[in-house]
Picture: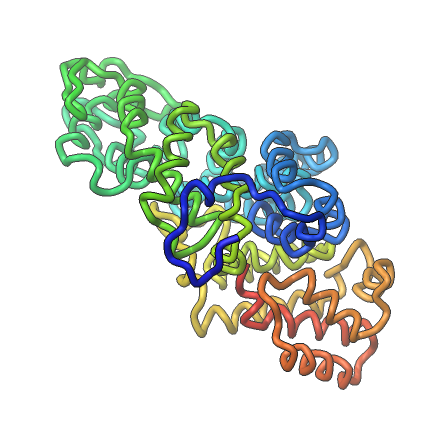
Length: 457
């Protein structure tokens, strides 16, 4: 394995499958790392189960498992009906966080969240709950599938077209918003197109409208004349225009770079020589996201010091991760109010660029808000662990003292080692608490998730 101090990373080594030399080299820390990145953390049973698999098996299973369990799907559908009956998009975040806390397919949900930030559409503007819910389902349906199919689906998604003011696109005045964003933000990235390409692509989308909340092609408003896009000439339709964008080579590099930032490290790895091999694989596969992720998420680089603890937890990772680590449940409205204060309100990305992530998640205000959110959740009686108290949950797992609890919490929750002085201080502060064992456990847990070390994933 390469050391963190090295700066030149061999791409062949980076994207080769990680194979522990000895069975003992495959550790719970590495399995926890996988689930922090490819889901929203793991409970003790998931960690033990993961240890019985190889790194490649772990990634392959998560990528091939794209069907939510019938039990979770049934409850989720019931909650969705209740939320949609209110016709208020403000209730959607609670529906999704319930799913994130109970999902049997964590990578699928993680990728749905990734695409939600990539194809950002906000309920602040699209106030129709059903349209926002439908878009969320599109993202989930294609989350691990073909990227081209996802782009085609999202390009005719009513919520997206409303968000970009493209719900009525007429040939005498083509709306350039969607044409610009599909090039700049969705597929190619800045610098890989011209202003003329945008204007010509916008002509392809003329006649695209929304009628009765459904996509509708109005041929009387479509520009059937010849267009020139990326030096290709033809009377392109909107669908053909999307295909022209998708076949540009720069798109694979752009998407691979974003996925590396999302799954491996916030900073420091955006080198063309590292991106190119996966981009070539992505193009050669016909833009299959699942195949790309299988290589990325089972690689030497993914399990190296370049990746461990090299991401700042998003608010969703921060809060959902804690609850999922100990099979927690809580008041979802309170949880979502907290996520809003931390800057990640689901269904409400800040703008069309989505959440920037990385260091932008952390400042003096959000650090205080993170600690306050955890304290407010942990003092609530309705916050349960494994359906019961935290002390009962600990005892079920053989943890019967505050010293053992601190050791266990640190082992499961932290991506980076805790120094011995900090560890000793934590134990002392927990043991000096004057409350019940349950209250001292919750207080200790609150102290751990307020540490700088817990902010890293």
